[in-house]
Image 1 (tube, one colour):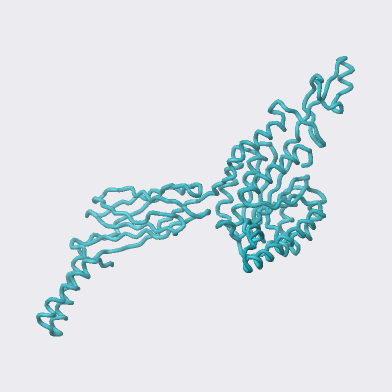
Image 2 (tube, one colour):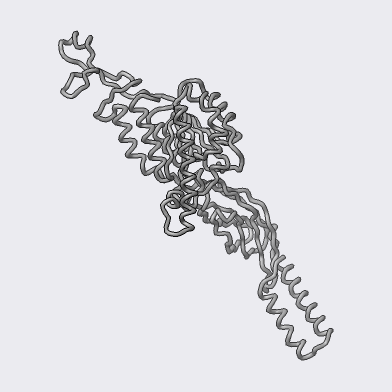
Length: 429
């Protein structure tokens, strides 16, 4: 049951007879009259139990864009139902919740609920509440029913804009453009005639002797290499950088690398976890790999626990023993890295190429440069200490043979992609 503003107006009208006949009986009779009018109005309203609901299939949308879900409302009763329908969603779903409905008996209407999510992940609907007013508009009959539905807000993947330029470099490396490369660990591709400027070390002397003309080998980078990407979802990834979680920036770098490695025909395996693995993506089909990675990582959120790198290293080992490029997307926080990650790195670097990619906070660098007041100087000292600790940790990682990339959110995806291309160019994967 619900009351409208009209019920309050009717109750206030009772002040007039109370002023004229200021007795307890006058108040009592007026209250009874108002209550009787409300009961009659509510009982005269059609029952919201006669409404049934069906929601369309779940939908996906990129964060920042809009979509909609359809709610089919069927009036199974014999009376026309007019009222208000509220489809409740979490605030971060950005839903337009209230809708006026007018459904004739035995008919069905479609209610389109617009959704504009403001946070990445799954957003599930709550209750659908229908409020049907009586003929006088004083009271209403109300009923809530659970109607399952959700929208998945995908990562916006802003680093996608860098993909075409890196694919152009990749086409040069793998020989699909005019340039052929030679380097340690690359695969033989074909023979061709020698031209001025070719590296004399690439001359095939046996083929030269057979043809009585200089012939050189052409090479292309090795394909079908194994790329393992580990996305840290522990407490250190929950920090916010420029009003966005650090995890989202690391995810952006991981997605660009997944897309690039997929086009390079490498076998990509992606893990996201902390003490346990929360998401897995694997495959070599470049047409589906990126889509699956974006969809699978969408509901992953940081958790306020310490990362168990021993468990994560065990999961990496279970994926295969073949030499791989292992990319660890984790913050370069000295305490977390030195206590949890450093002890397990020797076992990984002994068999694999390891890269640690960290999202640096630009606010630390701004704090380091601001020294116009005494307060700023204290902040600059704290920033200098933070940077010194990160550099000390990076030095320790370098000593173990780990490549360290520590860049702001807008630069890390590009730096990681370029580092991957450099390793591929030099045959170091």
